[in-house]
Length: 171
Ligand SMILES: CC(C)(COP(=O)(O)OP(=O)(O)OC[C@H]1O[C@@H](n2cnc3c(N)ncnc32)[C@H](O)[C@@H]1OP(=O)(O)O)[C@@H](O)C(=O)NCCC(=O)NCCS
Image (tube, rainbow, N blue to C red):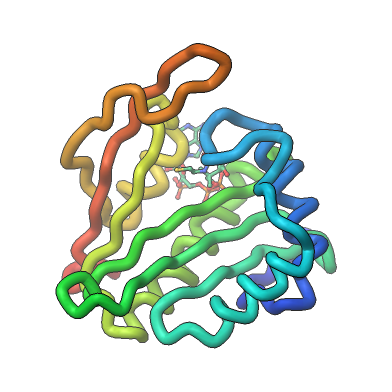
């Protein structure tokens, strides 16, 4: 295993869509399941172009050789009153859990966010996702509320915790 981290490029579109299908089918923790996200390769390419050029948003990949094994997304907005904030999301292939890949992707996001002047990171995580919550706490995130019935999957509801991290005090 030789994991490296890099920014996602438009040429990653097809592989990333396939990756999202795989990782989506491995847990109930993401916004999507085994179907992945419902966009075409062309649309994904355009999306990746926009992220790659954005002053405040970025998609990062963890790759093992040329295989995508994790991804993370930093989302910012131009609105002046919230331009100091970024929302983040992350996933790692199950076979690679517990090997530091999530931590590597978190560090990419924190470094990027800081370099673009971000002061606060936010995220939503299922309240029973102990592994992810432990990862976020390690990076300085704190929970501040629960969204009851955040997901509804096959008729079953799942609550989510909201978490934020004050980057002006993070590592
Ligand atoms: C959450 C996720 C990104 C973590 O990725 P990972 O590669 O396993 O993370 P790491 O190996 O860097 O471990 C991070 C921390 O998780 C914690 N952790 C590891 N194993 C754990 C376990 N079995 N139970 C609870 N916490 C655990 C530890 O605090 C660890 O940090 P440490 O090794 O420095 O002590 C990954 O499990 C994943 O993609 N899950 C499915 C999708 C998902 O839940 N995404 C988040 C949606 S909000």
